[in-house]
Structure formats: structure tokens, C-alpha cells
Image 1 (cartoon, rainbow, N blue to C red):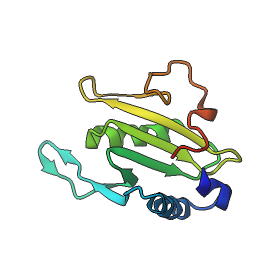
Image 2: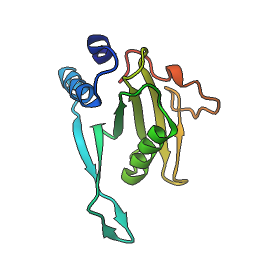
Image 3: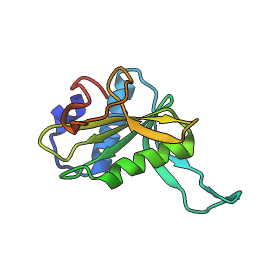
Amino acid sequence: MTVYSELGYGLLEPVYQEALHLELLDRGIDNFREIEIPIYYKKHLLEKKYRMDIVVDDIIVELKSVTNLVPAHRAQLCNYLRLTRLPLGLLINFGEESLIGERRAYDEETNDCFIVDRYMHPIDDVDYSNLLDDDEL
């Protein structure tokens, strides 16, 4: 990924967010940053809102810059998918020596969030180290 190649690893997440936003725009890909997600509890709109890092069409791009992705990072993306009912999310970690990414799909019928490969096939035994190609988002 160009952003990773240019900046390397270990900077703060907002740096990668801004750089990826600009890289996508340079490539002619419209995208939006820091999109708020309204949250309801028993039909009451809560004051607290989450913010998605980047949204491209109907894809949520959640960025991290951490030593290792942990289940809470994956749960965060799945919660965003459930709250928005968008079908696909990417979790990208700029905090390791190699760029790490995961693709998550959301099934509205089952309310399930699961990891998928580049062809959108569910993956059971997951090797998280190389789920995105270097030239993908």
C-alpha cells in the first residue's frame, strides 16, 4: 500500500487516516472521514456517537496503529458494520513491521460479522498476517 510505503509503520493513527484519505482522493476515489454513527437504545438516540475512520461507498475502513490487533479491534469494526448495516469493512493496522489487514463482512439476516477472503468467501481457519494484498486498500 502506498501510504505504508511512504510513511512506514508506527506513527499515530490520525496520520495514516489523513494520508489514506488523500491517497484515495488522488486516485479518484471519493471517501469520507470521521463519519458519525448514531446509536439508539430502546428508540432513544444516544448522545454518544462512534466515528468511522474512513468510508468508501458502502465499505468501512477502520485504521489502527498498534503492535498487534486484538479481538477488541475486530469487535469495533463488527459493531460499526452492525450499527450501519453496511456489508463490508476493512481493518488495517499500520503499527507492525508488515502491513496487516482483514476483511469483515456483515450478514444482516443473521446479524453476523465474519472474516472473508478477497473473493468474499468466509474463512474458518484464519492466518491474519496476509488477508489483504499490498496493492489493496
